[in-house]
Amino acid sequence: MQLPADFIHRMKTMLQDDSERFFSSYKDNKASGLRVNTLKIDVEAFKNLAPFPIDSIPFCRTGFYYHPADEPGKHPYHHAGLYYIQEPSAMFVAEVLDAKPGERILDLCAAPGGKSTQIAGAMKNQGILVANDIHPKRVKALSENIERMGASHAIVTNETPEKLANHFQGYFDKIVVDAPCSGEGMFRKDPEAVKYWSLDHVEHCASLQKDILESAYKMLKEGGILVYSTCTFSPSENEQMIEKLIDKHPDMQLMPIDKGHGINSGQPDWTESKLQSLHLTARLWPHHLKGEGHFVAKLQKNGRPTKHSIRLAKGISKKININDYRTFEKQALNISIQQPLFSKNSQLYALPDHCPDFTGLKVIRPGLHLGELKKNRFEPNHALAHGLPIDSYRHKVDLSLNDDSWKKYLRGETLQTGGDRGWCAVTIEGFPLGWGKEVKGTLKNFYPKGLRVNVK
Ligand SMILES: C[S@@+](CC[C@H](N)C(=O)[O-])C[C@H]1O[C@@H](n2cnc3c(N)ncnc32)[C@H](O)[C@@H]1O
Image (cartoon, rainbow, N blue to C red; front, side):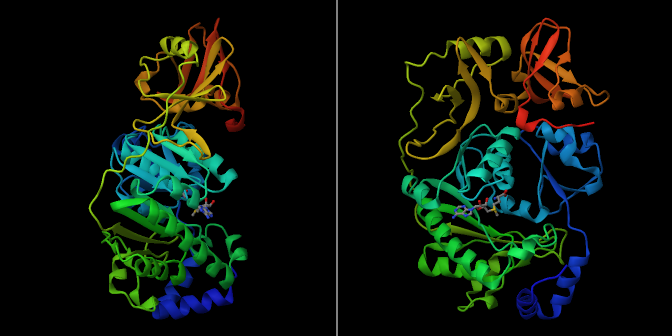
């Protein structure tokens, strides 16, 4: 790999004696990781079920290394949302955040959703998770991943940090800023990233990050926690960024991060002020652990926590007739959704409990997408096949890994099931993949066209 001369020079200056080890890590293969989705399966159960060898990632409770030749992204368990494929060192960020059920959490730069889906798992679908990304295309991937992983309490937005900051001042208990960065930790994973790198690009990213952090600061409540991360090595996007934040907002205080497992401390020496508390930040280096590299800082906003009151989102208007939805619910589910419902353009959603008002924001997914109110009938959304506990589905078509019927389902073909039960959750070894409608012995396939795969 041809690394840029300016990059080599800077890394040699930063790492000195250790730089040789750093550069030799480019000869190794990238580390491949997956993270178990605890919204669908617990870690021990997954270890027993895993159809390929996996090895624990020491710094992430739910993370495992796999061998790339096993292609876990093509396995039906991936389609069922049992795991998320994620660069191992990136998994440390949400570990540091330590999300808890019931909290109000914002993932400000969230696409495609690695950290959001990890946070959702820790929250056990309780509380409010706002997963935002500025990029309209990337936010679509984020929304699909949130859906596949069954994060039913997540609201997906497509906003600028400034606009969100005007709306959610002092609202969040915890915020992650996994910032757009110069991606120096991506060179081994994506050699194309080398082409976009320049010293100017590093400085451009640093300026963007400063603005994003300013918005994050406004949205954090007093006593709240901010986790800032990048997948780059440049001090100007890492230690110096935190130095600037603390300089501007002295009420932001660095907090310790549990390290070990080859994780290093951040370097006060790489800043002008040599602020000693920067030791508390974490550096994950590709030559010290199995991962591509990350920087993580955890800060708390001083002050007495106050309960922020924001207007709650308005539920569905009484004018909208949801009888067809309730009929569907009786036919297909063992439960009745009790949360407030919300409807836009005939699409019906279940809002998370205590959902904040989001009027004026570009919301892609206000909670769990239940489906579409069509003329005289209701059609469930794919998200609903993933967003409920498994025993909520009244009728199931259980597919097995031992025959090819799951391949037919993922290709979008109809299946001959012999029954006449109406809407059924189609499962692989008991884990929902999507919907099918069983009529007179045939199961019509409702696996979304955009997700179908030509699996042989
Ligand atoms: C490092 S990626 C996030 C990865 C994501 N957190 C994950 O774990 O999957 C940074 C994201 O920031 C978004 N972004 C770029 N400029 C932004 C801005 N000004 N405000 C907010 N997000 C921005 C990009 O679209 C990109 O998806």
